[in-house]
Length: 206
Image 1 (cartoon, rainbow, N blue to C red):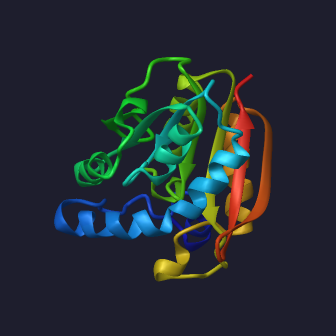
Image 2: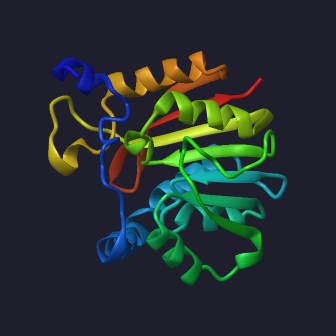
């Protein structure tokens, strides 16, 4: 992949080894503290209610899943890392409202057309295959269901931890991929999440 292609790719950290073992658990505790801001933003933007079934792709320790459950929604939290799912189960009190399942964006353990909301909060840049991930989101969404992606705003040329997120061009590129996947009413917007600026990309399954 050329430097220019890598800069435009929306999954530029798709080769990340994942969050396994003790390191994964430690990262999970960090995510518990840092994920609450995006969780609040996502539940507001997706207008989550008791009528919803939310699928949380890359749920990590489950902050967003629990936020959706507090709105009365039924939730499926999906993550490829068993260590994250163990932590999510351990810190979740209202277990009946949330099902935790091992999986990934490209293989969601969710029935066709059964979700009203699918979101990915700071995880799309880690997806292995964005085209397959969006095809899966389209498959599990019911007609009228909403997709939401949230990523930290980053600057072109950023490296290391500062590169975990999207530039404006990458946000627009993901929006274009959403349209190609068959979603409609796709929008890109900037929001404030705590002390950070984030990009949100939303769309609807017709």
